[in-house]
Image (cartoon, rainbow, N blue to C red; front, side):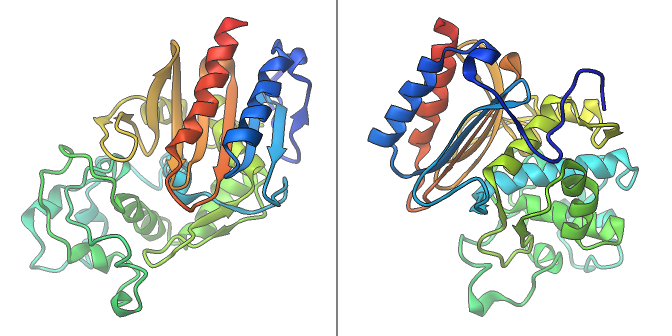
Length: 324
């Protein structure tokens, strides 16, 4: 363990807001807002300086509930890629997908496909023409649940040029499985999740999955904490500092659904003068990392509709902090 740094491998510390130089009135206002105007929110968790300073659950959820993270799982994928780079399982993000699967790529593959790299998958810029939403979970389209499905797709834009919020990250799942010789979830469990003390979760990482990663709000926050600590967890470097930095700096301009700068499966923004990066999922699921305040915010929510308004909770929190 680094000197003076706490790691919540077994449990999170808890402290009062004032012990972290926070006005408790900020959280009273937050709670009132959630109860009055955000009744679709299932949980809100705020961590500062390695301690939980606000944690509330609603709609029957509690700290032990496994919650559907929607696309937050993508930031767990990029972290798994970071561990593989650190272990030299991946030589470079410039490795081409066609080279990784050279024994499986059909002779008729589009020439442009041969340009697609791991970095393009990390930035949602492969240029592949993915099937419409719902295609992969339809009983009529279960022909493949592996990399062969990707080989059937057309390339409609030059790799690395156009952002498109499609299943590009799934390419990373199959690439890492192939390179490591392990099932992706088993690899992630051993090299990312268990070292952080994450043992209670459900993760189906295939194309045909519906729910993907189900995990507790507290364990979602551990990913943010790993990034705040520059990839180090206790006495181990799980991910290199360089990869953390690259992941959370603009690599491409993103479009739908957040319409902002995008790194390696992280959205990047600025709120009231504070650089933040975050992961988001349908239904208003959010993991925000706010380095200037050594803070993490997790929001989980009903998945009845997009609920982008949940970001108002985070914006108000940072604005109130700037005022105190």
